[in-house]
Image (cartoon, rainbow, N blue to C red; front, side, top):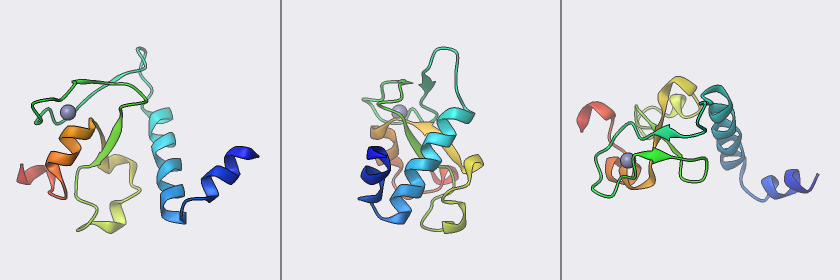
Length: 94
Ligand SMILES: [Zn+2]
């Protein structure tokens, strides 16, 4: 009950994103509980991601493909530095 309330502090898009991220983690669970950053383009990329450091990158940018924003197949495990470096570009533009 308390958690619901915490979620509702965010807007509906953020709440849906938190739920999508959670669903992605469940659907892409690994034996080790970690993932590998799929970009590896930032010099300080840690390579291995935990649930704390995992971010999900939109392979096709969400700015140009808003309909893919919550599409699981458009999401890939990514560290924060690489995600930031990629910015709003599509993967093919890197
Ligand atoms: Zn990375």
